Image (cartoon, rainbow, N blue to C red; front, side, top):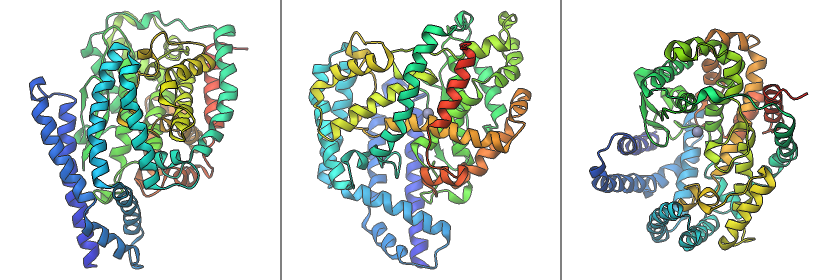
Length: 497
Ligand code: ZN
């Protein structure tokens, strides 16, 4: 038992340092005075290094080895040792000098990307991206894999998922959605959304977001809502999970949906039980499962007819100029689907295409089938094939996302999997809660949070994404739930026959 106590104490040390680090990062992305950035970056660098050193400490390795053989551990302690051991071995797999060279190159690559995107100059970014791909391929070899080096990278975001499986999940999506988007464009009636443009002061928008978060059951005594440029959610430590949003005064709903999205992430982190604090289990199951929570609140609930029955009176109270707009009109206007160039602005129907093309390019980059130099052209081809739109420059094409500049290969699939997992979980929720629509119409959203807490949140990282889905729905990841949901809803919104 002495080893177990020392192991837990070590994890608490990591947790406390990590908490301080996360708070500094939250501040950096919200309220820091601009001139303080440089010194803050150094402080953060120092704390990050100290935290990392604890996560790869030899003594932690010794604890893990001993505890892995200990049959007397409780199921929770065993789960903790399992996930901590996995992270530990992954962190240890990369030789420290290689990782240090990578960290320097990555920081250069990120700055180069920022400038290249501003100038729409892929050639300037290309050598950096080549370096990032090269490091990632080396890392994949160190991590190890069974079939494809890309799988070793996906593992860092979506444990247990492989590129072969993702290809299998994508195939029916692509087959059904490509013609469906065309049908919406040619046979559908596009909703009128002109009333979403206007002048809607941030203070009013903030009141709406607060009201929505309260209805969801977000706990303000253990969190807060702030504004930032790129909204995010961060779990700073026990009882401190903060969400951020962004209000565009010429756009009625973008801030509200951003708050619902981040609120979904926030509820997940707030729902992880206190007994998992600082055990390595106090996080979401995977990036994809986390995204399933945010997408469910943002899209499946927030963009439903029932939600607008509930929320329209609140909206009109804040912005009386909208008093002639019906709940039905709000529902339709919040569900416009249109091919577009930029992933982060894409709607529910077209979003997955943005991910498919990134997934396919990453897969071929990491397995060496294509070269970085070919990316701009391959990107344009894929956009034309999937969405029928072609970027005029690389800033709105291959250079639009930050991910590749930081070598986050394997991250994108999680966004798509989040949509699919979300629909699969939601189908089960609808089965379990027969009066779900009625509850949403009344604004009685707390039972949804409770259901998610019971079925998803309480496990933290004890279950991996596939195990969790199996536990809740009895099935493997299955894209048919998303397809049914999205085609039914948009068929109605666009009045398809
Ligand atoms: Zn998200």
